[in-house]
Image 1: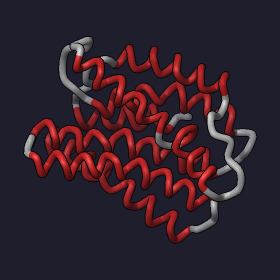
Image 2: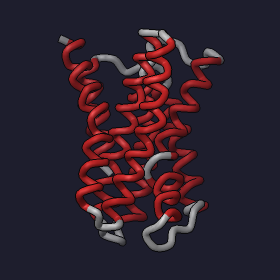
Image 3: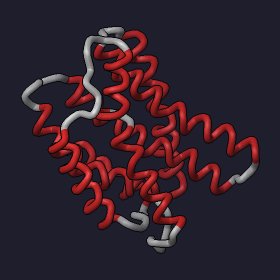
Length: 197
């Protein structure tokens, strides 16, 4: 529950900028988290197959982080926000209410996959995807757009596959997918730190 807000504060201290729409991120994130908490899971997972992977994508790992990116891009397109663009901080702020509610609902299961792995995967997506978005914005060339778009598509798939592999007790695949998912976040943090200096 505390990882997401602590990481947000840590990243903000490094990046030295908060971006636009922070209050709206908390408000809309709270509304989304409450609806998800009340409605429950959209995909019923059974066993270790495709349904478990789809449940991880829709209900647990990927979609909760992808929604704020879509909302933020729409708000920028229609100029609802003014100021610096920071997709990562917006997504992290959005995820704080969701992390709190999930911590309450998952605490009874006492699963390290849900309580430890999933918040790390959320962070990796929230900080990793904006790296490629910013590359597209800064270096708008056809090959950069194609390469970054493929990376944006691949990153959530890798994160969900890491969750699925650990849940299925395929530890070697799990660590491989997890490491690949974390690489863009690490690069982004190093870039923010160097730029702040």
